[in-house]
Amino acid sequence: MLSKSSWAKLNRTRRRQIRRVRILSRHPFAVPVITGLGLLFATMILIGVFHNAKVVEVTPNSKIVIITHDGIKQVAPSNDKNVGDLLTRLDITVKSGDVVEPSLTTPINQDDFRINIYRALPVEIVENGSVNFTYSAASTPRAIAAQAGVQVYPADYVTATPNQNIIAGGAIGKQVVIDPATPVNLNLYGSPVVIRTHAQTVADLVKEENIHLAPTDQVIPAGNTPLTPNIPVFIVRKGVQIQNVTQVIAMPIQTVEDASLAYGTSSVIQQGSPGQETITYQENTENGKVVSHSVIQTVITTPAVTEIVDQGTSLSGIRGDMALAGISPSDYTYVDYIVSHESGWCPTKAQGEHTCPPIPDNQFTSGGYGLCQATPGSKMSSAGSDWATNPITQLKWCNGYAVGRYGDWANAYAHWLADDNW
Image (cartoon, one colour):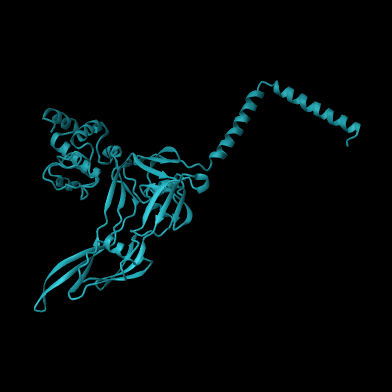
């Protein structure tokens, strides 16, 4: 504890400091100096906060990219090679289970390029009474299971429903239920194949697979035998020569049009796979020689799984390709009017088509094709070998045609209006 003399000395010191501050505050430069120091201090703080912020530089060749993620829509210029490079530069993290459309390796090659990021939610996967949890933003039940590393066979039933009890279930996303098919070792007229089935008995299996039994055919074991995993089942035909041929069933592809993605980009929503079938022939003989074959039946041993593809249909970015094709900004209005009326800015449209095909389906027609309806479309090969799909190549050809034939786009526009829209 301080003595009385020490306290008195301390109080005198404090009073002298207060008097100095009051005197300084009355100086004509006091306020500007104090304000300047305050602003300097605030500036230093801001510099410290933003020192590590990334600066997005806009260059003449930048593409405008629209990124939808985490409930926001972010617009950024990009000179990046692909989607993954852009997201890395913008510090947008893609976590396990997240879905990016289009894929991270997709090139950014047009303005108004669109990227959608779907964040993973907790998902409950139920299989044979066992419950597992994962994080996924996949769109289909099979894709969710595949993303979680769960083995799902083509014959398995996979369904998804919204989780009805979030608290009890522990997942706010979907509940995916896998009903696995039973593997059976089927020996079909001497050819061993493994099939997976939801049949309960041998007789059910024969019916499910549309196996047509002749009166002399023998099925082992008996039809009422329950099917257990890997049970051997024999179907035997005596007295005739049998030949089995295995062939591939083509993988079906389902395309879903998505206006939230740029034209020409796509994303696989669900991985597909080809199937397999066994065709059984009976060999018809005369004098010991095979003279013909007749099909007894066809058994699908592995069903094909449909691949689902999200196909971008937004055409807004293609208009930005005019600059890349060497078209002057002063001509954009003329070009936009003509191309809009000729093809609706669809680079894969053939004359007479009323929709925009995701991929070329009539590019070698003798009629008009492409953005400017070149007749025939193969004329545009002079501008590049990718004339059937690349809007920039097509616009380069259109630009050369308009300037070469009419002098400029303004004259081409005037001719189009005056000469029956041609």
